[in-house]
Structures are given as C-alpha cells and as structure tokens.
Image (tube, rainbow, N blue to C red; front, side):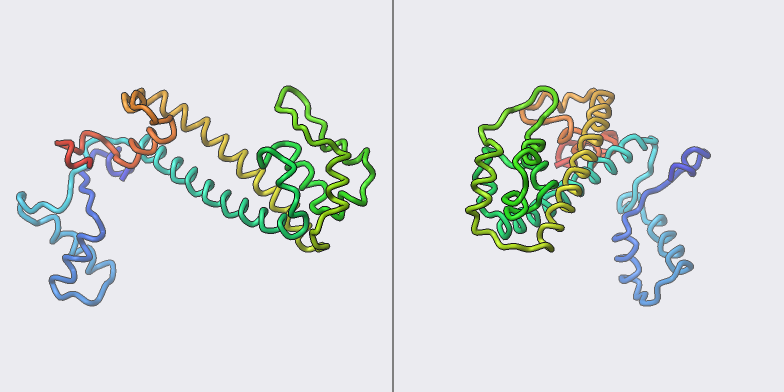
Length: 233
C-alpha cells in the first residue's frame, strides 16, 4: 500500500471477507491467485451505491505503526500475566508462606529473593549474610518491614515441598517477567511520544491515558474516513 501510494496510484482497500463472500455468491469453489484477481475486479466493478471498498487518499502509516505498537504492548501484557500465574503456582509449592511476608508482589526484594534462592529450603540453608544482600536496594525506594532474619525463620518452618525442578522454573520465570516488564516500559515511552505528537483532544476525556488514547486512535485509523459519529461507534 505504501509503495503504491508513494508512486501516485489510486488505491482501493477491500475487506477480504467481501471478496470471499463475492466468490461464494458467484458459485466459486476453487481458490487461487488468478481467480482471486477476477473476484477483486468484480468487487471493484460494483455500482457506486453498492460500493464495497474505499479509496485510500491519505498516507497515515504513522497510525499503522502506532497500532502495531499498541497491539504488541497488549500481547506482552497477556504474556506477562501467563508467566506471573505460573510463577505463583510454583511459589505455592515450594514456599507457600512467601507472599504473606510482603505487602505487595514483585518488588525488588521480592524478585531478588526468588531469583537468588527460588525456594524455602534454599533460604533456610543459606547463610544470613547472603540473604541480606538481596535486601540491599540502591537509591530511593519503598522499604519493607520484612527482615532477613524473619524470612529465614519463616523458611525453616515452611510447609513447602523440596523440588529442584520448581526452583529452576521460578528462577527462569523471574528472569522472563523482568525482561517483559523492561520491554513494556520501553514501549510505554514510545507510545507516550506518539501520543504527544498526535496532540489529540481524546486525552481530555477523564480516564483516557496516553496508551488507551493512542490505542483508540490507531484502531480507528484516519478519522477522515468517517463521515458521521455513528460510523465510529
């Protein structure tokens, strides 16, 4: 599409469902490139009042990029949710009391402990000085009431099972979750840049963020393609 528009062609966009329905209405069963070309010509030849396509007049590939980015963001969020659920399942097996020690999950200390030890058994058998290193946070941040000593005592009394496999999975899942969060943060920054460039009044709506606003605009496409509000709805 971009190539054709940049070379001055008039381009019609046709929904594949339209050509598929046209082919079936004409009794077509066989499907190949040559027959598809004829079907597309049939769709283009429909009367103006029954026009089943639209002419693309504006080259808005910035919206295409925004749509791809917001969809990628959505996919990463779903992937993150899957990994988080798997992590919690493994924690419930090897150290079920672990989450009760923290006011919120996935903090720096929370993830450090899981990545370093991975189970109650490993924490219980580790020197207290090694555990303390996981509590060392550089810079400013929320401090937790949990102490290394309390953690080790809880680990000793845990009803969690001993499982090398679950411990390995926990360490791997923590690494994957951390990576995906970094990727989402990178995308969030780019989406905000797109949103500022769009400078759309959609951001004035309460509850609409840079991400949701950009997602809506990107999925709608060029607003000039709509002649009335009901078409957008």
